[in-house]
Length: 251
Image (tube, rainbow, N blue to C red; front, side, top):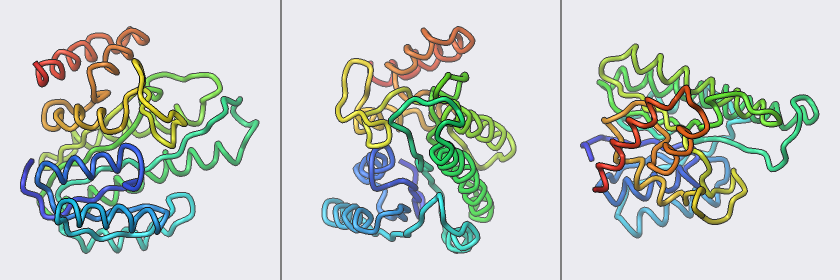
């Protein structure tokens, strides 16, 4: 991995965010800022990284559904950051028509959409001052097209994909990678373990992390590239190319 001063991970206490923290530490990065909404989980992740890898870890308690974003911006602006994983997100267990459960829709749009978008804005502004770096944003393959009964979730992830692609073209020194995985076994997706089509967070990240600097938009793993290619013919050429690239990393 490159030599970055500080690495910031949102949603770093569970799932993909936590898996990225551990994999980055395994690959030699040692200075982290972990952002999450549960102090006990933040403390546990901090202790694990410090004991297992000798990492230097700061934590910041923040709820993306209710938090003060100006305070978060002020905090991040004082950090010399070169690497960001933006994995904050919420899901829903039930498939419902849009408007049947307005509180769930509101939380998804606020956290996955506006919250993630606001944090991307914060990270970009800070990295501009620090000379550039790498940002990874966790979107979803469900943002490729509208899916009935998952309207708010699909919309929030589609928003992220468009923002990432535009932001990546706007800045020469900042690489913005948008990850659009299919199903990953995390608390957010309510899948407890991996299977043929569902990757564990650890397995997913071990593949996805190798795509940094190679592609700016990808599902992150060979299995998911093939799933998306099968389900969405509009993405076939791009996903076939990504699948070939990822498969070569493991050949």
